[in-house]
Amino acid sequence: MNPASSMRGLVAMVIAMACFITNDTLLKIAVVDFPIGEVLALRSVFAMAFLVALIAWQGELMFLRGALDRRIFVRSGLDAATTFSYVIGLAVLPIATSTTIYMAAPLITTALSVPLLGEKVGSKRWCAIVVGFAGAVVVTRPEPSAFNVMAVLPLISAFCGSLRDIGTRSINAAVPGSVVALASSIMLGLVGLSFAAWEPWMVPNAKMAALVLGAAAAFAVGNLLLIYAFRNAPIAAISPLRYVLVPGALFSGIVIFGDLPDAWAIVGTILVVGAGLYSIQNEARRGHAARRAARAAAAATPAFQGGAPLAGAVTRAPPND
Image 1 (cartoon, helix red, strand yellow):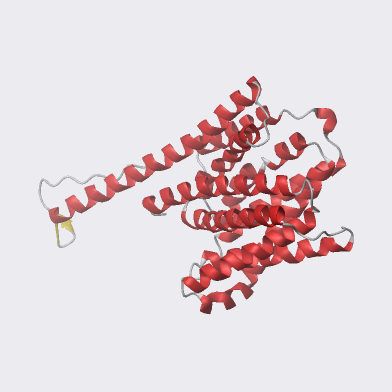
Image 2 (image 1 turned 45 degrees about the horizontal axis):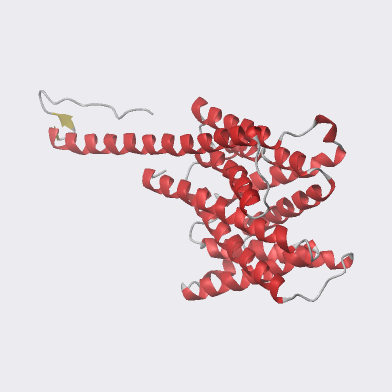
């Protein structure tokens, strides 16, 4: 992939994670007083309105028919399965257990990218992913006794999320990311509405509307950036950046909910942030090497005539990083 495009993908992934933390924080406040199905359904409606407005503003309404593409439909279904399997699991499992199991997603994504996309994953990238996962485990510190049969739900969420992210790469690049995100919002809205069968819905007030509107904007922007990241950067490079959710959640807990981290949480956060920063630094180094190789090849071009090197000309292979 183009090095500059890969770096933009990594930056997009970090900002996407910040958006998702914002979304989660606002939803956590909202579901204290309102049913989760209603909150998610309304969030999807607001997100759809935001995305349709964006698509119209960019003059891309003609691409809406692309939302009917089978690959986008499958991705939207996987996105809905990811969200609701995790939310249901979170309702019946301790949050530490659910979070730790879901943090297997980057490992699953990277592992699946090898047979499904043919990506090559080096030992350094694997180490960054494993270190990030270790940091997440240190932060959440699940108790072995907390695991039960329902622990399969966040694992299903992690697996579906990995397939969703890998499937993003197969979607026609001509289809705008906003259309892909809109399809996911529609699917999530329909699934959220299905919760009406067993949830007593309430009339939204101004506070709920503000919280859900903010969550919808963060969710929509996060999805746009997530799609951009998986379209423009190697999966093995951006997978460790998913662990940015952990320090982001800690920050939200301190500032919004007054939850102070202990020493274990601080150590785990350092590991998570370190793994993410290393991933960015490693991709930047690879990009610099690729650009040096391109400049060297361009500089050597005049030394060739008729496909053969001139006498005394020196040719060098680009670095294999």
